[in-house]
Length: 507
Image (cartoon, rainbow, N blue to C red; front, top):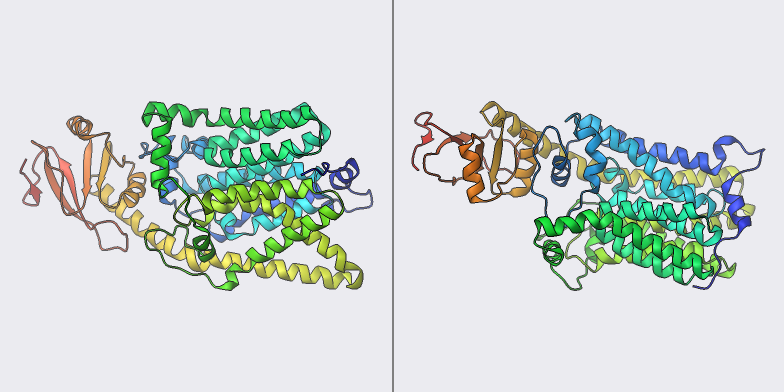
């Protein structure tokens, strides 16, 4: 990678517009419009009342004024919990959390692609943000308390500021790189590791001074280390050490070693949001076509850039994006479409460059209105296909499941499951969602701790046919209403005294 970083002339072209250009057509304004549409999209497609998934309830409960913290497994990091904390400390409103994160995701998209206005020509950065924001995974997770979108836009920002520093050499750009990589590591340490290493290696081969190249490497390393510090410290305080936490995290994702989940990712381009343990789906080519098209556009961008000796601005995001995809294609045994969100964010930049160059190549021979109409039609069709994945394949099942689970929570609350309480039983993931809905904890710290909590008046609800037996503790049988929730229909609630013939009075 010996090509020089983008020239000042190219930066000037992308940073502003002619005085005669309409204000709304200026690159930064177009990017702001795209960001605003991105923030609105999940609120319109899914609605602000869309209830939380199991992972979200775990993240939300960690810093929450209304629910105790649920079990926090080894792979998780607390970055997204911090993003939601300003709301979760004040209210348990689903609408408030959704709107807050939608607004925050719009701001994050704008800030992430803003440095690219000075790296890529014309309106290419706005086009890249538009391509990225119309992928169903991005729409679906834009207002969710999940890490992948946030780490993706953070790495996009870090890469953009790295290319700007290699060209301009301003110290504040190093600070921006460090902040972006720190946020990435705080949200998802593995993304910071793969993305940071790829970005640092790319910087070493760019045609810039040694001081600037080493400056990028240092900013990436220091920012990532600062962001990951919380995760590392927690490894020693709660998981038995860093090595033990890494081992536990790998075990949850299929164990150490090389795996291949690329085919599974291909098959789940139309959902579901998680495919493991015998999941068998196969998306039709209607939902898969954009992968080869995106790849072709990236190749076109690299070809034009190589011919014009401006390869760096296209090659760096391509390399970083592919490396970030590799950890999920070759590092886990299952598919979750959200895993590839950071790769989509980075690869959207060269893909947009390729699309812009193709449009410029065919524009002289095609009437402007026809070209504009054709582009709008293609974008509308693709966006419609992506939105259909959500409205047809994901949203109905999720809403049915959430409705049933919330009905179970209402029943249990009315039956006395309130105040300090702990939920136990089979189907831990469903129990975690129910625990959040009822304001309970989803697991004890251990047998002795559970006994101590029960003696202090904490209610224990056991979901399943069996029940926990403790001397002096009685169990009231509850029969949950017949909903479609995957939770067991039979439950046992601890009481200090027998309540009647339906209570188990044995020790």
